Length: 53
Image (cartoon, rainbow, N blue to C red; front, side, top):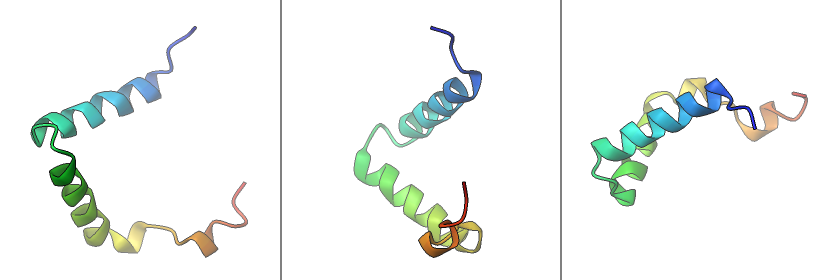
């Protein structure tokens, strides 16, 4: 099976983030929630994605 480079890059970054927070799920989730708040203006709401194909 051919490896998708984009998927491998995503996995690499996710692993680096996990390692940065000592693979502690609660701390990782807190980090992502902080990013979500910081970049809230860039996140699409569900109602905005209904016509995206």
